[in-house]
Image 1 (tube, rainbow, N blue to C red):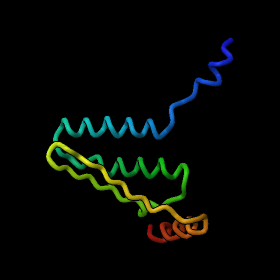
Image 2 (cartoon, one colour):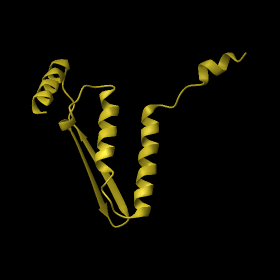
Image 3 (cartoon, rainbow, N blue to C red):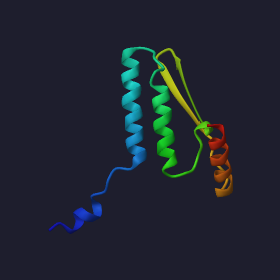
Image 4 (cartoon, helix red, strand yellow):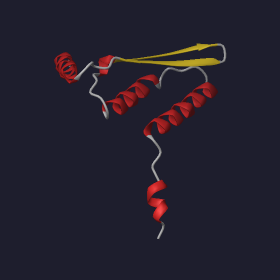
Length: 98
């Protein structure tokens, strides 16, 4: 019986896993040439991950990717509600739009 295994055997954090996925995705995209086909899928995955912790509408997330030479940058803008009342308003607004 391993008493310390239970205490120290923890799952990796979701932020670490997300970072690794982004690094793999960006490395793959750099190797295959410029393509923005993955951005909608990436945006959906990021919004789903954020929604696990904070109520945010799909419209509150903006993603932009730029490439200058051999350097690529991924910019993610997320508008977080100030409090739960604002989150409820954002949900109602998103439901009214679609």
